[in-house]
Image (cartoon, rainbow, N blue to C red; front, side):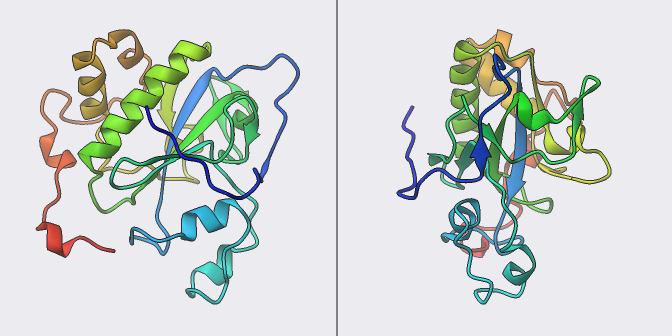
Length: 207
């Protein structure tokens, strides 16, 4: 699995509590500007270099100090911003299985996407590979969405993310034990292919 690293120093992270290893993977979605893909803005946000004059929306978020361990672009490219051994600032106010402060014990994976458009097959493939690798290294007990650990506050990865499709990829790859860790149900578990394809031609995809 090929992973790239941004040239900038690691930012917006710190040490996990003593003896803490990741036991949860949280799937997020992000697009900057909103509902548009491509460009350097996500990397700039995670490394505190987002230009507030670059877009009206950036002026409202450039001061935030946030990050994720991994970012998966539309083409499936995988970028590591924070080593999974460290605590990235991705979850915010959150709770999982009665335990708060999910940043302490989770790995955050951001997919380039939004609530109104399907994700790319290449992203599911990259995520499945990453999950398999993380579950082999750490005592991961669950995989869930940002909206599931921060209900009412967050909506990502949103209704167009196919949890069933992700499970199917893992099972086909012989990683059924990883598929069992995925918690969200999602509709159309047997066939949610509509959620995994774009409703418009390639040329019409947002940039």
